Image (tube, rainbow, N blue to C red):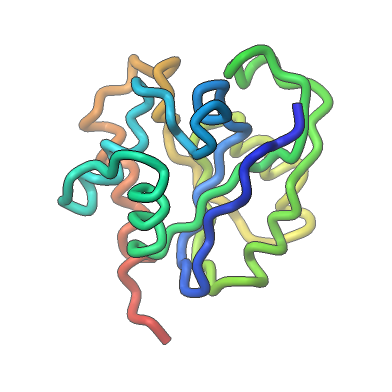
Length: 164
């Protein structure tokens, strides 16, 4: 599968959140974390204390307003549905391009597989350490919402740093 979504990144984005590959629902919707049971948008809304954005335009605006860039580690791979454990033949996106286009202060991965793939393929090129966040996927339903919210609060200091 070839990654079908462009990155979301503003000229003042401070945080880069990276998944592995868009799920079938995200590909269908044409935007990141679009599965109705994925808790990504709910978690971000809670940490920023505002309503969860609905729809592509609102979600893109939410990210840009909060200085968040979104993309995925992989440009292509063989994958069964949305199962990260099935990923084979991974090829990385040029993450360094995002890091050069915006003042990204911190990189976070939204799950262990994205973290492992980033460290394997991207870290040698970027030299920028990534921080692991738990997956918000329905496949990680054992992780309580309170734990997700607590973990994702780690992005706040970077998003809220003064603009230079």
